[in-house]
Image 1 (tube, rainbow, N blue to C red):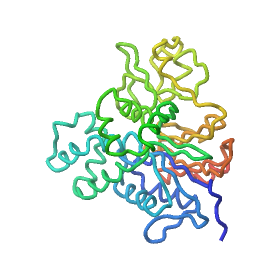
Image 2: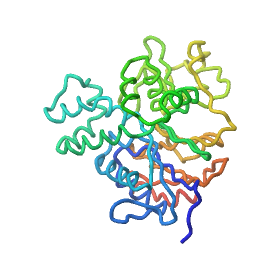
Image 3: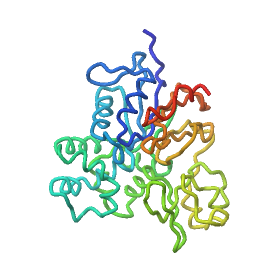
Image 4: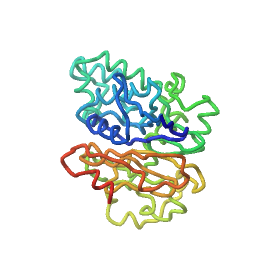
Length: 331
């Protein structure tokens, strides 16, 4: 048997409960099921960028599949913003599932988490097991070859957490400190799982393709010397008219980070891209291609290269009848 190199890793984007698509993607990548979990016969491992929860049709099954891979040593996963949302609201979510309501959950949260709440409400022990697992997830993964985070690699915040806690895992002490608004722990979780979000000017808002109204927009963390808001924006929804040409205000400039061009490749999800997957820069790849919105569940087949290649993206569709994705991959 040929054994994969230590760097051989398949990094997989936001699944959001699309379990059938995930199984097809793993099989396309060469993984096999041994009766307990998926594994690769050549020793490759998978890394998930987070956001298994919410929106999709088979969330508990997705969690079970990924957790089994992690428990068997065949995969690892970083926390996404949807995992943290469940973790932070775990008790209120349990109350909602037991009684059909919870005063601690806003209407917006119920709407956002609806699929998860409905699919776990008849299996509360599975919910409790999920929350225990989420508490053990890291916020980021880093080795000599690559980095993985859900939304934004902020080296200064990561260094501070490593100095204070020794790792990026969600320890009970870390989690407790993060519940204090404005703490460095809360800021770190928000930045790493949600990215750099710039508030829109007073009176402006964006209605996203997911139906949610937002008063902020998502930005790049690799823009070199951006001058206008149009240089920063990184989301499927356009900015309000004229804002893209406005100079970036100093208070927003001070909040930006820049991922160096000479750093190891970084992989992330979160941003709802569309179209054919490709690197954003030679060492930057987003793997969220809107799978749950009938897009592509996407992976990058990494083998230690410093310069990422569009030829190493692999994907399937949530709806397998949409397009012959093997034909697309050979374009």
